[in-house]
Image (cartoon, rainbow, N blue to C red; front, side):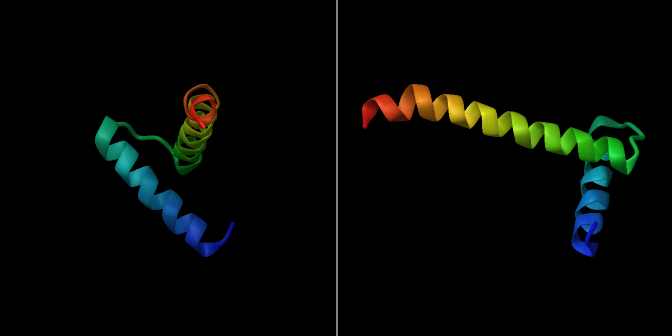
Length: 56
């Protein structure tokens, strides 16, 4: 991992642990972050295909 990736992971881990009042490891919060990003991408693709494309 690059240095910036480690900094982002630690920052995100602190934010998640503070928000949910948990004690997740950096690896667990990374999985949480990438799952959220992937889910948002899938939702965007469905929205694009079903809502935006028919109106073009």
